[in-house]
Length: 232
Image (tube, rainbow, N blue to C red; front, side, top):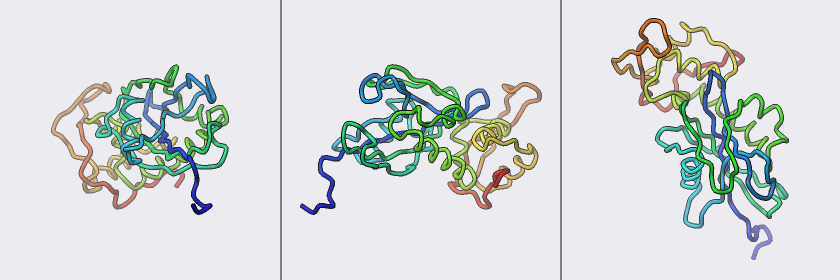
């Protein structure tokens, strides 16, 4: 057997699950119920089953750890993490995925977790070494990917309810980008981008004030032209 092949390596699927709660970006964390890192907070995830491909494992873990069906979320791969020693149990390569989920998502703790918590991203990212394994690094890179995707795709709509107002979509962008946006400029850019959103012909007053039009995600996967972050 060639020496370049890794014997007895395991593959894990970990998830950076982001959602907007109380107008702030939060990440879903689980408290590990057993070793290694018992009692430490970590990103949700688990091992890939022998008959699964990577995407299937990510979808399964998302449903098991959050109760969210992939159709309500934006899910994509962040990268692979295989530094020797990252897992005390042996050689484990984690293929991390980013999931953007709508508000109101209540997590369902997996069998190896003693608790779950939505934590503000700012608090979790400021102390990455408190997370188990190398999950601080994975969180940082997942957050960077999320910010990039909101510039170039319609993924930001996954952070809203299926029917959302323009102010709710704008609040999601402000939470991810951690920057205020000019309301009229943002609204014009969104409505003026073909396929970004579709007006559904109904209004709501759930935000208070005057009735606001409701929209849903449009058919376009990419934004042309791109939205530009205030610090971009």
